[in-house]
Image 1 (cartoon, protein in one colour):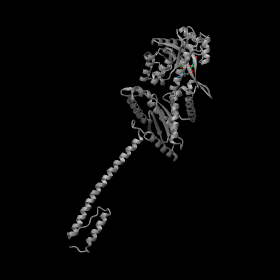
Image 2 (image 1 turned 45 degrees about the horizontal axis):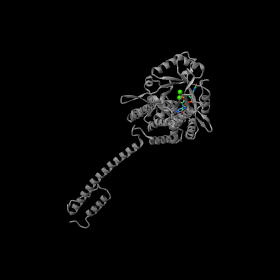
Image 3 (image 1 turned 120 degrees about the vertical axis):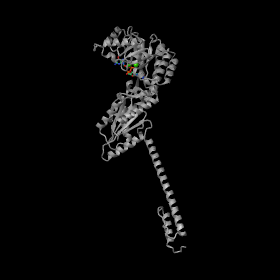
Length: 511
Ligand code: C2E
Ligand code: CA
Ligand code: CA
């Protein structure tokens, strides 16, 4: 039997206190006596053993749960920073990386360079070959870009067909080298589903200044990229402050153009198409101008591209269509001018072919005017049709069924695929004026003109020659057997009142 002052009681108490304080590995010693007190001590030790095991298991579980949580957290973070399609980084990752690179630059390093890249003609790949092919092209492009840069450079997809490359601590020379390598690697074709698809990109480059925000840097690279797009395909442009000014002017112009379309500031000028053998007006081309309240008359080359980029072209085109058709109706009913019998020609843009409502606009306008559809001829540039897709073909065929005339404009400047000429539902071709400019100076030119005429006729079409500026050119064309011509020699494009007066006074052009 143990007594009240048995030292083991104190040991037991001490041991329990240690266990309670978390020292689960501690054990209480058992005495030689092996009496009841030792039995309690053994029981306590067993409990401690169990507790220790349970505790270890718990610790392991907590550890593995923590690991899983961490992995999930990292995956979430990765997802928040990557573009799911290409596996490249996304915009928010790029912004973070730009900020990091700028922090390093502030500590004495070189500032980063940012390259923005936009694929040329990606929309038409998507439209003609479907989104799955488009997605594969984007993935392939991403891989090619990645292969052009070092591991520490960041490649991101910002959305659509826009990519960015961040070169931390870069010089202009290094960045230009990388940019040209990227351009080179994308200038060609990419294989998808056994098909070769043409790629090509426009690149804008901006070397950051210390302390510049990611927002400014992205904006400047974007401006440079747009300047490169405007320059033509597969180009690199480095940001210059003058571009910023140009962009501001352009934005201002966009706003003003929107008002101009609804606010009666657009005007049509008219230029005759002449039957070369007789001097009779067989057609009139409507050419739009913008009567700007402060800048005066602005020519279409300056605002049509802007209207096309911003989508204002549909409203503008619609205004041209209605105004020109209404003008033709008036000339045909006014007794002063009604002895003339000619068609009205308007220029339509590639974007119009992408709108199904365009067919309805044309049908409604014609119906409203009571004019025969054949009196309206739509001029389309070659490149607009060649870049075309299913929708284009559908629109062209529908317009054709309506009975309006279709003509390829600026022939000879674009792709000039003969097989294409034959397949297109057009009735006439307008030969670009550059083909006439060297007539008289270049001895080979007459042969070229004859050859082009032959080619067009072989496709079952007729040609209108544009840019006829003098009597010799008109004479030469007539002698070659050309039917129609247009140009300053016959008349410059004239305001409505002046043109109406000429129609009233004159039967033969030039009189
Ligand atoms: P385009 O369709 O090729 O129009 C012919 C252009 O050549 C006109 O320039 C005309 O003024 C000019 N031109 C005519 N005869 C001669 C000549 O003998 N010599 C020379 N050097 N030039 C001549 P404009 O009016 O500045 O129009 C430029 C372009 O703007 C047009 O080229 C057309 O593509 C576009 N455009 C004009 N009006 C419209 C429109 O209403 N809608 C659309 N979408 N585009 C339009
Ligand atoms: Ca034209
Ligand atoms: Ca033309």
